[in-house]
Length: 304
Ligand SMILES: *[C@@H]1O[C@H](CO)[C@@H](O)[C@H](O)[C@H]1NC(C)=O
Ligand SMILES: *[C@@H]1O[C@H](CO)[C@@H](O)[C@H](O)[C@H]1NC(C)=O
Ligand SMILES: *[C@@H]1O[C@H](CO)[C@@H](O)[C@H](O)[C@H]1NC(C)=O
Ligand SMILES: *[C@@H]1O[C@H](CO)[C@@H](O)[C@H](O)[C@H]1NC(C)=O
Ligand SMILES: *[C@@H]1O[C@H](CO)[C@@H](O)[C@H](O)[C@H]1NC(C)=O
Ligand SMILES: *[C@@H]1O[C@H](CO)[C@@H](O)[C@H](O)[C@H]1NC(C)=O
Image 1: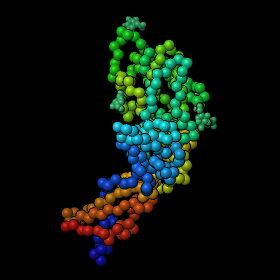
Image 2: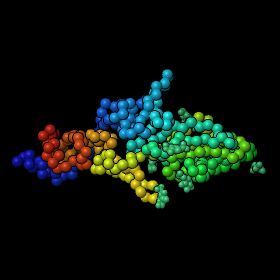
Image 3: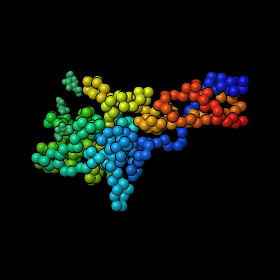
Image 4: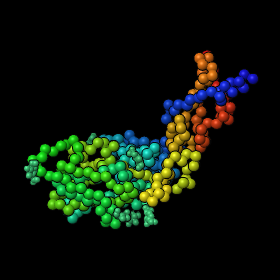
């Protein structure tokens, strides 16, 4: 009788959930979930084949003598700076070399892989002259020319056309060339400015570049967790994105990867008692059901 009363109150009352404090697993069971300071969540993975979804997501953790180890996309040998499950993109570190006339620079070839260059990158030309971005058919898809005049004071805090120009790049690029038609060599590259702001200091020999990563089939992960889709220019779906249910956190790409702690408050009896319990998401389920409330009642403790 008492239990029934509590149940009725519980179910009819407002209840709140808060994310749990403990970090849920990011890698598949038995796999390493980080390399140096970088978290490596599934579908990315290090080591054994079952640790990553497909070859393109394989990460090599390279040890270095005096520095922490660094993760690399194995297939392209590109250093990974961060991986976002939520935004389905990854920031990589791309070397910058001077680009001179007659000697174009070719990007990594992402064609056929789960990656493409994000349209959030800017194409930047520094120095004195111009540079063009061409796609794999040789079509010009971007380019800009800098203004050079030694009597103009160089603003080293940005890229506004003087000794440095920038343009947006089209979406969907999987490979590109950079070439220049001017006498002077330029340093021209992609830059993802949300990772580190563009500044006049382009002395660094590499720049952050954002890649989108894609899950190309809707049949790999449970549909209950599907949260977004990406289309190509024609609107056909080419990538599927997943997330944990509201108030859960963790990795939606692994079974048991989402966790949440629910704090149930009996608002019907304010100040009388509060009740709390925790329950992990042990299935691919969405939100906790009333049946869960019933099942979960056993370990409840009441606090006066
Ligand atoms: C990742 O890509 C998506 C879609 O292209 C974009 O909306 C989002 O802003 C990107 N994430 C970041 C951190 O820029
Ligand atoms: C890029 O890779 C694709 C798929 O592997 C291949 O068909 C294409 O020829 C490559 N392009 C270049 C320029 O290497
Ligand atoms: C290259 O760009 C041109 C012009 O935007 C476009 O028509 C062509 O389809 C692109 N080629 C590839 C392989 O994306
Ligand atoms: C450089 O700028 C100065 C001042 O604006 C101008 O007088 C001069 O003609 C410019 N030189 C060139 C080569 O554009
Ligand atoms: C150059 O690299 C260093 C070390 O990686 C970093 O701290 C600095 O912010 C970078 N400079 C720019 C302009 O991105
Ligand atoms: C979009 O549709 C046109 C016409 O059907 C086709 O030629 C083109 O290849 C499609 N583009 C993409 C990116 O699928």
